[in-house]
Image (tube, rainbow, N blue to C red; front, side, top):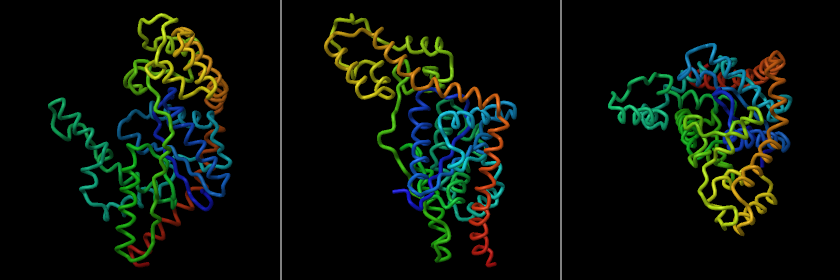
Length: 338
């Protein structure tokens, strides 16, 4: 499936992850990258720090988040000797490439971009002008994203269903350039959607999100993880009352992380009135700690030895940059008739 293909993953530095981030994005991205490399393809993973400055302007906070996200992916198993792991800002060619793409990008693409529309909707709900607080970085975000994708001749871009638009815009821009010059200058990427990626509910039943304050942390202490898990919403039914597992929030979260046998055990216990919520929460706690404990130790190591991480990022940039230069020069030679 992946032989000869380039899989590209970008991640914004957003701070320490929760269980939903890990199960829904980090783990699938690392597994897909490893599979691509094992089957004869390539995997590029970059930290999108230029995208991050649209929202975060404090360099101390930004660099701390960048440090954390790099260590997070390495701790969770990203192999920087096989995947090309680098910082977006270490590839200056991305900006020259983006400038050229602007000339082939209809403004209407930006008006329809999800991030921009969401910001406008938020302003309208607050009775503010449509563009209040919206900078050009946010508005033109899809073009920089297209550059990130196209610059490395990406074949597949793993995205959630709500992010497919980014890949579609990259395809449309590349297609317009190829059509204008009647040559396949830029590779048209495809979105890769993992249908079975977990969408993990939070402790209050809504989607797990830092903005909701309903997360189960993964790099916290055992006591902090336990406190979060035991705060999961339940009803007043007694342990011996039968319960539909699909209506039990603890079970919904447990399904995303536990083994099939353990999931079946909890489902049977709830359905037959042989398991209370306390026992179910303890099962979830055991499953979470078993899954994340080894990663916490690696994360602590990388955070304390960031010079090693920096060396990996620099090596990744040294591998990625010649590819970016080659793609940029191929485009410039056509555009400027060299």
